[in-house]
Length: 179
Image (cartoon, rainbow, N blue to C red; front, side, top):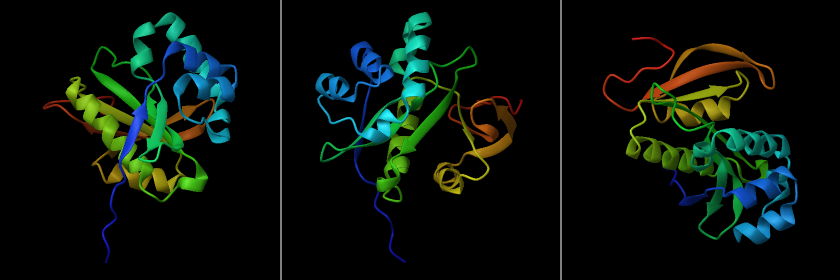
């Protein structure tokens, strides 16, 4: 059996002008500002960029944590990944990522999640949470490789039923699953 090699990716963090362009669904301007070609797949997430734009207006510290673009070694944008916000009072964050269907099954989600977990560890995050649709077996497989365990379920008004998974990063770290 051949072992898959995880590709190298970078996560291009958003700055306010790029986030504003994405929220306005101006992919050309977002591309000019970011220095990478922002793809139509990223444009499909206009609702997310608008949500994050409003969020950083009220909580500027979140800008450094929210979704960035997943960039391959060749400079191609293949998706987005980040956290929902800066760590909460319990030092917990929720991870989110999505890879363009044309680029799935190439290890990009795994590579991006690895980068996010490295960042969370460096910054003292105690628990990383992921909420995933029960039907999204691909994403469930990605997080399972990192040791996430299911701790419950929740209802999301946008996404419907979600399975909730957690990964403790610090000794004694725990989130909604309790002590």
